[in-house]
Length: 109
Length: 334
Length: 183
Image 1 (cartoon, rainbow over the protein chains, first blue to last red):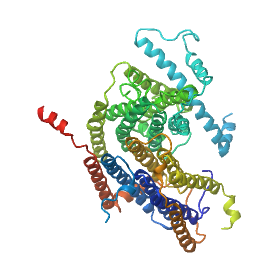
Image 2 (cartoon, each protein chain N blue to C red; image 1 turned 60 degrees about the horizontal axis):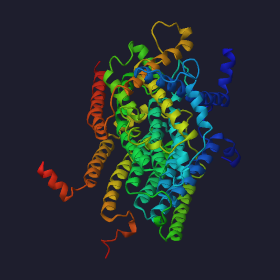
Image 3 (cartoon, chains in turn brown, red, blue; image 1 turned 90 degrees about the vertical axis):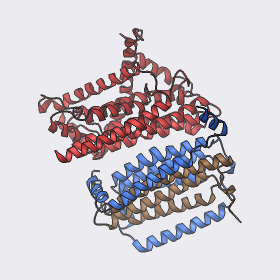
């Protein structure tokens, strides 16, 4: 960049963006019936958390890189969770021929 | 003259525009040059002549082909998912173009000297996978879908050896910036291929697999799957895929030449001539690697899917990991 | 910081455009009637947030996001979608009937979170510098202060890998069991 961008962006613009992404993810989690789409909404929420972490790190932390390291961990755990979640969805699909979460109610009273 | 150039480059927006125009120019040009080289070299290796009507020895053949593709009818199959169908070639071409940004053509002659140059090139070349799967799925064609699924498995499997084999030179150089790696090789004395021959072999194998070239040709598999994931693409959309394939090959070989063969540096060139001779040296080294890639295409039969996967997971990844351990240990000790 | 000063900065124009792109594609992820379209919209949303990370001078995390999330996790998603036989075309059964209540819940959540952050941080600015964070600092932090979380995360990955392979393995049908015993 041809100039120093320090102190030109508000912290709140990133926090509100993160909050908006998180609530869109919550909407997706509640509304979607297909299990894969529910996982996609969870990915949106984790991404919102990452934006928050890195915005806070730039604004508040003086010893560097805590927020970035933690968001790398979040990305890694999200990848592990997606891998395992898709394996479970695959088994459900094999047994019941549909990935509809509303039909998974065998354990309800 | 050089004063004028540095003044223009100093203006941020003008410099940016020029750099983008240059990259947009390099991609089709390199695709045409290496495409025609591939056709002619393949022909001579198979004891035939290849196209020789158009131009002196057929050198305008691919330009004529390109113009032909442009004037063809734009067919989107009825059952195909039109937005995704149209998006897929763009994604693949974008990821092929991205590698050219970080390659140093001379001391200081980089489009953008990123501190994380190596990581950037690897990350953006993994975007092509999404484009290929989108192409395979959206074509509403059994053969395309099978080709796309095979491509997904193959590209993911070989991404790991690609990334891991590159860590060796990065450890030796101590930096992920490509111009820093070239300068480290100058200081080191010999190009890294001498001390890192095994990662070079792993990188070449993984790069050929990432580009879906023979012997890792399963996603395209011309004798089985028509054209694999781009069966349904005609006209200028096919031209995008074609350009992306050759541009990505050139980009990967430039990357390998910079990491392992010493990039733009050759011994015995005076400092003042470096900005002019450097690009020529780099092109020669990359051209040599492209020739090797073309040579391999006609030497080995296609690997079957399970042989391909077991090669990646059972051989290349352990070898690359072992190499990282040995390199790191020796770097600390010596 | 006044509104005029904020609008005058080119960084904030980039932020505004990318934020609009992220929000639009995120809404399309949760409302699209086609599964593969939703996954591709998520690619766009993640690419947008990688640009956000670049604005906050977190270059390494942005590239990790592109390499891991877009290059591997989303490919895995697309693979899973294709194996569970996503139809080309619209699938009507993708969203249930509780849309209004869910929209209300998410709007309330947005209101609460925004009010909390706006009242706590007011007009605090982000102290970024023009150059990206050095990878050396990240490496020192991961292998120094955070080495135990790093090891734990690698165990999480190992267990997810083993668990995924074990859960998704196909049990042999009786015919294949017979063949296997005959060999």
